[in-house]
Length: 298
Image (tube, rainbow, N blue to C red; front, side):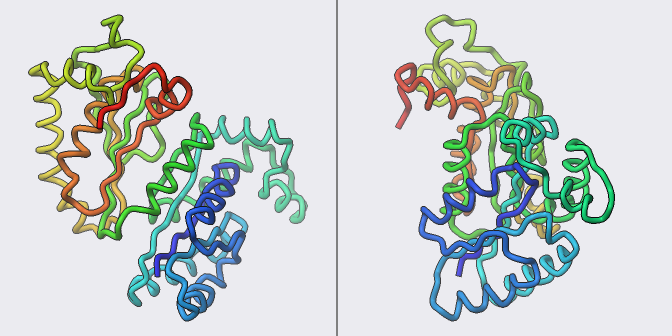
């Protein structure tokens, strides 16, 4: 049985993720107390469920060690266990709580203990306490992305075949900051920028005219070759460390042309490996907001 554990910071998008997984055919359990993870997984497996997802949040922090032990046991028993950790920048999380006027769970918890926490303190405390769990899963930084984009990413994550390690190539814009999820970061701002060609400016690195422009440049091709050679050398080392997820972030100034093309090209080169994902923080938003501006390649 495929079992997806959805966890992460309050306000990071867990509700959106669990609803998307339910729409995708998973049997979903929200806000599951951590100590029930093992018996619930066994019960669902015995009932013949093929895909299930459970959401566990910071309120179960006291038993997160038990969660880790349960996940290890389930993997030993043959479950296809995947951990999805949703996060966002502190400022983004504060903005989301302020807009919805919801109270942070850790603020409520502190009051019950006779303490007072500001919203920022509650967000930072939860992030600190959940850090060990973040290291065990695929981290999705939802800062600045649309709910529809998050749903696509979650669907993509769940739909990938089981693999010893999932490798994600993610493009981003330096002007918006490096994604929290980044394990390796490559800066491609030194290669020729299609932005300065008026005909290419509204397009993205997924469009054929931009791809031809960049592929014609010796520096751009050499950059891709060098990154690929680095990864071929060092991915086995990450595998020896029993890593389940490796997120490789490719950045350019606007996250629209160069980083997108490099991520797509690397994704194709490593497509022979099980569990390769390509996603774009900016290009996917542009395609959704102005689909008429681009003509996607096949």
